[in-house]
Picture 1 (tube, protein in one colour):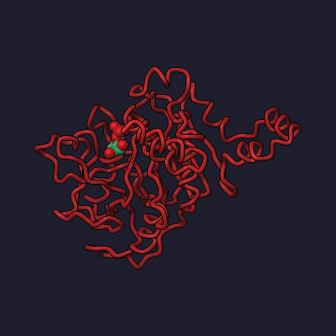
Picture 2: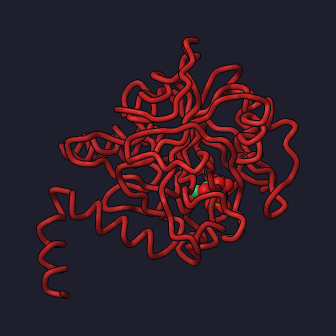
Picture 3: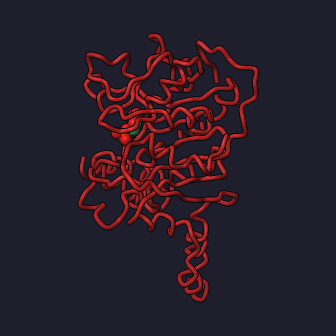
Length: 307
Ligand code: G1P
């Protein structure tokens, strides 16, 4: 990987092993599907969205997953737990493949824990709820709405971003260019006018949460993958409500830059699919379905016949 505009730090960053996954959202954009099932449990091909995300985190080397959850979402924790009754039954019937699939929902070597976010006060607040489990370590934040498929032969962007964190010794935020009329849906970063090439990163000089198109410093949107220094957790404590009346992670990261901290924007090489809305969820099912050995042929034939 190459990079531009980096003032790399010689200090070796803290051990990076914890990933916070906020799952306390109400899922209003995918109702009524998410009325009784957490939206994170909706399947993309044969696994719930959350399992794809936990596997992405594990592949990037994270071994401690911290869910920030709330009432009515215990199906997510159950999914990663042992299901004795089902496992006994599958074992008794010698359904080995199915047994393995239910026993491997949590990747080997990964621990999962959860904390509650009692009030929906924003993403920054959700991340802060995990502070007692994160301690003074650097950490990742992974938004489970966004699915980011691996590029064949090139590995995952999150894995690449961890490499950039180690190389430059500073936080990394994954970004993706969006159409200018869509900037007000996202956090937008300012890399002093630069737009790093896919797979590369550049220093961020400022960032703003959900700007109006006229006020946006660029069209580089934050797309749900962050590797952050421990200091951000301290800054979140002082962060007041911002855009939409919510405590914004973007504002805490902007404070870090303001006080002289370094954060870089890593431009993804793949494409993200937002499973928190209907079109993105359908697209994700098509893309993952076309890559899955059991479904790719019939799906390709269907798409051909429809075309
Ligand atoms: C959150 C972040 C935003 C980011 C977005 C990505 O917003 O606050 O900076 O661009 O996720 O999906 P939300 O979608 O929760 O409103």
